[in-house]
Amino acid sequence: MALEISSTLLVGLLNEAERSPEHEVCGLLFGTPARIEQALRCCNVAPDPRSAFEIDPVQLIAAHKAERRGGPRIVGCYHSHPSGPPLPSARDAAAAMTDGAIWLIIARREAGFFCAIENGAIERRFVAVRHEIVEP
Image (cartoon, rainbow, N blue to C red):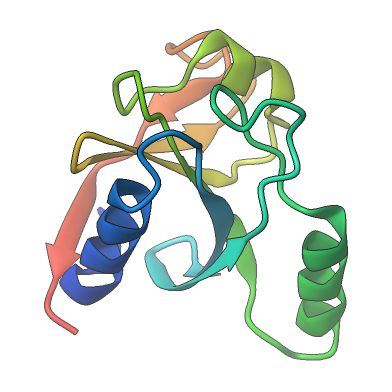
């Protein structure tokens, strides 16, 4: 089974990253383990957003509270690599919890999909996720 994402949602995320060529953009992904249904852009509060991302904790906590009240389920996060490939970096691995969350990484109008797990093949923290781009 492949993780699904709509072409419209993916193009929107690619465009968001392209509009910020100097800084990493970031946000939350919502849906199910089988389908990313929506994304929420969040402020990147990292000390140096040119080479790192940190989702604004206020936005993250609000999303968790909304989920507990029956709102959309958080399934992962996304961010861009303005000067690198769409692959998890060592910095990403150091920040990732091994909770099975989806990480969507954008670089140069390409997107990589990964799952954060213990002892993954990529940076010992991630495995690539097979994905399918579907029509909305």
